[in-house]
Image (cartoon, rainbow, N blue to C red):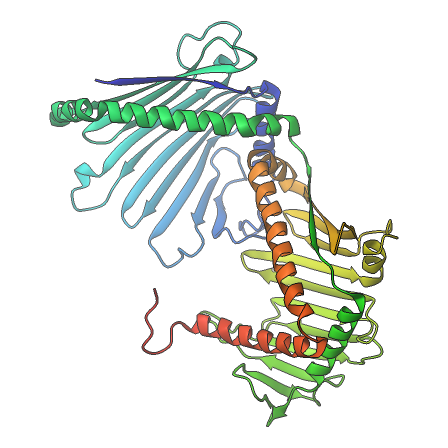
Length: 506
């Protein structure tokens, strides 16, 4: 049967870094916060994960897992700890049944003190009826860390993978040759073969497509080699960092202080001039109701009505203070108090400080607190060239997994431009501290790229908005902002309700 061989030169990964990653993952697993009732609560919707028997990670411990959005389906995942020894051998068994399809897996990790020695995984898949005999497969994988980093040559390939469906099998062996130019020489051997009555058919098929498969594999390994060597050296240099810092600078178009202050004052007035008839906001399709008090006076209580598919997604808003020459503050909450927050400004006529906060359940994050402040005096000083003070815009995020911060500072640039420096910091908390460090090491490059792309796109949106603003007076711009906000609120409600009558989704 055909064998396909390839060799690539890869940037090395130090042994201590690999052992550090394994140790960090074990730390995170051992410190998972299970409550007294056995539920796992990490502040993120991971479904229903429960410790149903025994002590966490002790021999005999048993866990039951129902993934998110699968509560109503025939899904059952069971994890059983056969043995657990942080510096020795650990053995875990997993059984999953989804709609009659059964998957079993066995994971074995052998440690030599704090060094990873061997990781082995094997498993089976058995499909449901009909034709159960043809819906099955077996797989095995093994990584022998000690042999990979051994000074002497290995007796067998340190990395192996085997997959065996009913009428075929495939195996992959990965070996490490002699290093060249401070890079690993990694050799791979991939083998396909038929089984049983399909053996001659598979042999003929492989003869026909052998050259095409070889070219595809060669191209695939070349791309993998380039991607590895492009990202791994920087990751190795970065190492395991418990505190992650991202920075990016962009240039944006300027806008005058006078225009901004007139716009804020006009926005304040536009809200005051909203017209209610019989307790409902007029001249808009959005369903906004004044349920208590007089419009925009202290104590006024509003309800932005939005019925979601699964729950009431309305928003309650209360005016605490409203004064164009002094502080204005509003508080808001969801009907079930799952989300609460507030926003305030020191003066609409001469705005200097704007603050806001939000806490509760936000998307899949079940315990998140956000707070932010915009100090406009610092901003104008910074872009005017007399900065040096703390950043003008700051925000913090607090979550059981991590805490983070955002800061934005401005300075003058050439021409009619500002320089804007954005900094984001993230640090894991408690049991998740090593997990955040591993996530940064593995996905740091992708995360940094996404962060820079987001900042670049935000800067482009700012430039477009400022260009339009320059063509309009602050008053109509503020009125357009109110209209757009109410239209977006109505559009969100329509999306929750589904397509209108006679309209089919794409």
